[in-house]
Amino acid sequence: MPDEHNLLTVDTNPTTTISPKQAKPEATLGIASFTCALAAVVCFGVYEFFTSGRVPSGIAFLAITWLGNLSIPATGVALVLGIVSIVQAHHAHRKEVFGLIGLILSALSIVFTLMGLVLLIGGLAAYNAG
Image (cartoon, rainbow, N blue to C red; front, side):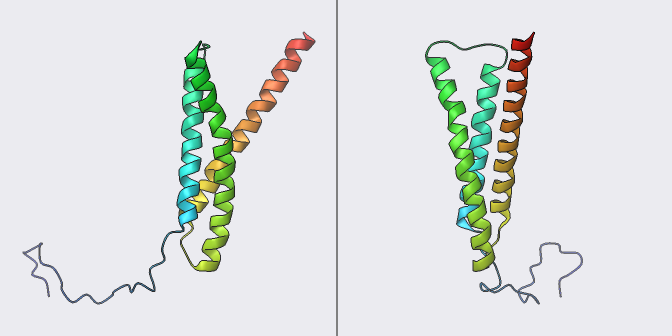
């Protein structure tokens, strides 16, 4: 029994242990989905930061445009990997936390992109009508 005055005493006989069979590993595809979704959000955020209010010119314009365009396929890959990860985690008894986060991030990215397109089309229609 640990001494009340000594806080650094280690109990060498724990009452509960987790065997390797009980600990569920994280789904690898879930980690890949989360990473792709995070990369897509960062790419899009950097693109929006550098193009808000001003238009870059020359090689900077080309680099920023490619960075923004890179977020589109990365979002699609993250969405597919998130769905596959959740299905795999359910059948293989693995954790599905990163797959779920990647799926949510990529779905939100797609929703915000579609909202931006609707606003852009609405603005162009209002501009052409007036």
